[in-house]
Length: 216
Image (cartoon, rainbow, N blue to C red):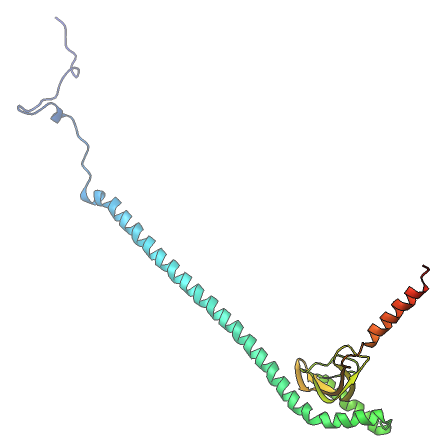
């Protein structure tokens, strides 16, 4: 008869009416707090994402507002600078317009050789000052007539012009920048009706001379 070793092949006592599986230990079921934890993390993440989206939207709106303000400020600065230059030109034009008769007298005195001595120094100083203020004189004999900057006081015909031309400057014109404060007052000449311009005559004469010297 063999001896049984205690502790081996022994089954635990199972109450009557219970299954054998009930005797095996089971893992503890998660608590309600542990089951609710993942759901709470998802909700918190969604809330943070929504807040982040709101912050990004607000930042984008503020950035757009700042860019608009910057553009408006730059436009304002340009307008102010343009108006400042315009006001300066208008003020200078008003002052220099009053000095034009004096400059005309200086010009006539220079033409007649009367600009000498102390009067010459004063006249040259005056011309230097008005030039610093931006005053420019224009108008030359022989230039084409331009009604936007010339005022024709005398009119004639001439056979040696091919277009309406300023043949005499009666009073020079003056401008400040692009602003004309007085047009040049001129005498103009137009081509003689039916007359051949001098340049065409010379060209025709040259052709005749070259043709006459050719050997046949």
